[in-house]
Length: 236
Image: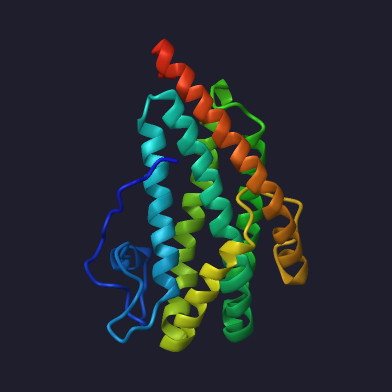
């Protein structure tokens, strides 16, 4: 697995409760160094923003590298990160906002629709070998869809959550968001439900199989890396 150095957009964590009018404000408030305020409370908005920035860095590194194995690893890790992040949102943030902030229902439904499109894109991407000529174009299309979703979420969804939820609620949501890592699948499952009890059951089941697939893919990449070091062939 490639370890990416964190980028810090602001030395201070996102306030426990604040109001913003654009995605630029949210991005500048994101901090990859801490999601905890001076009061000791954590903020789920920070966690989401940090995930967004991490995915942006991963795509940028994938797009700029020519090393074949690194490119494969980054593509696989990007798919995993997107899948995990989306499922965690669907099982924690989205249902909470629908329940506690009814005015956000339209935005949440739209976000879930965008997740569904992205899952289909990523599922199609998984059917291609990273060396396939169509792989790069397919991944870039998926990224453009995701970037659009991120921009909308940081403009329409997260500011509502940040301004309406209390510091305690944001702290509780941060814990819930992280706890969903245990259930969230690391692969796209476009036919699985995104809401309700069915989503929890489907994700928990898929998680088991995804862990096996991840281990197999990692082992395969490690073997390819070992062989490529012997031949000196590491560029795409």
